Length: 178
Image (cartoon, rainbow, N blue to C red; front, side):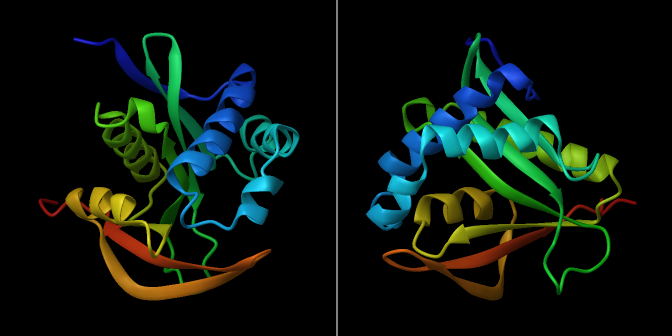
């Protein structure tokens, strides 16, 4: 069995996180995201944005975790309190979760999701949301197979080269047993 794990991202992971985002978007999301948007996701911008997320998050509840196969970072997730205007109190959100396509189907996404939910629960979140591209059938299938469901909320993001439409998925983090 492969040596797999999830851990909190460290400053020396930032370049790899930025690379994974860029390459995954170019590979898996090229049919959804306009080329002009993909061109803006430069290594420098990625290092800047992910460096801030890892090194100086907006709150202690904002975190970035990485998935590893042996010593190789194969994916990551960023999450924290929801900033949606209509979010009830104690709602967390997964803002980004990506596993490099070549490392897919090995359980890394499930481990990242489970670790995120564990952290959100520890931070007293009672529900969680995630925004995904409305045409991203793979992410939709992944989340719904884990018990998440669309909440009928959508948004349109203005992007160079076209509009990006997203749908919001949600799940309860409250134990049914207690």
